[in-house]
Amino acid sequence: MYLARQGANGPLVYVGVGAGERKAGGLRGRLRRYTSGKALASGLGEAVFDRALADPQWLRERVAEVECGRATRATGWGKAALLWADLHVCWSVTNSREDAVALEKRVLAIEGVDWWNRAR
Image 1: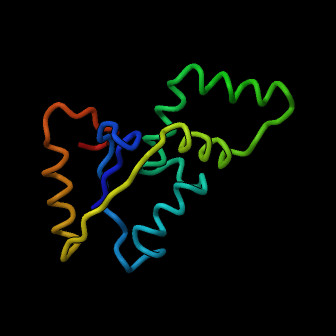
Image 2: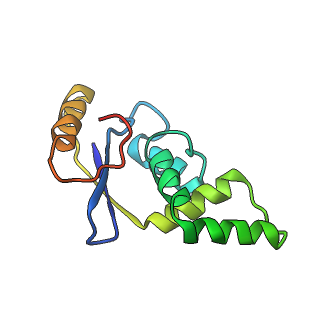
């Protein structure tokens, strides 16, 4: 189970369950997909992109790139969104996926946190 905070000392914003060791390198593989910009439509990648798109300054910068003839692929926008988010990630290793999911649910139940998670 992993947690993301916006900024080194900023608020917690996202909690997720890693892929474990069975798929694509576990949590390291999942984070690699996010940092490559290839996970725009899932989990943390989607949450970050949604918030970046809602930031007028970030969006103006992307539009300016297009208007100057420096249009980029969607993965480039995904990378830019992740840099904008300034996420800092920590994790907790659990004995099973079930334990990780249960821990994720307990963390998401914390009151007063503006979670970026879509499904709560």
